[in-house]
Image 1 (cartoon, rainbow, N blue to C red):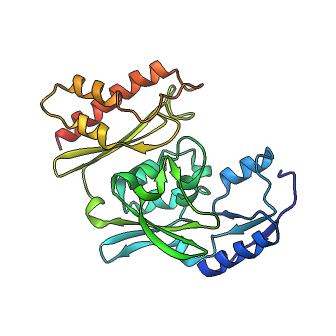
Image 2: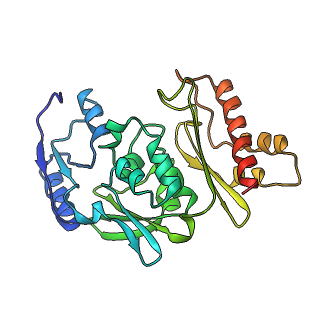
Length: 277
């Protein structure tokens, strides 16, 4: 149970949602946008957040879109991870989504919620980082379409009152050779030690990671090392690990040293497989 009262709103358009946020903020309601709500409910149950109003985005058609428009795959922020996996329009994204939580949770967790959340993992963002996807964002100053690399820097950097409407991914990325690994300490239960997603484009491998550091990331420097064919693979991987953007996580899933061991093995598997595709 959530131990406080709040007002609930369900606008039917992007503009209504933005206007509601402005109105409720002026009323001192501390509003938040809501999609699947799994993370918000968790934080609210512990009193980590106490919004006076919640704006549910699920009735907005644009936030539920999932189709091809010209040469772009459009995915609304309120599309659930289960729906993503079933549609399989972008196989790497589908596989990444399928690895998040369990089926019951994936029926509620949305693409936007996973990307914009605060937990370390946020694995659904990895394929979008690799594909240089664009994000459509709405707020008080209207809409803007920007590269994911301009707004996702360790986490989504949204202005107050903004929300993610949809993502746009060029068709050229959807059918590229890919690999996806999710390494856990035991079987298929619990958070990952390492999640690695990779695409091969123009004979070069792009990689992105979750569970390694305290945030998901893609690193051009790491990819440069992994693609340096002048070096043996072990040397490439050693260089790549030396270019991590933050310290390795150390938590109940595994120590930093064990996580580094798993990361190196996973990098080797990814490079070995994609070099042969």
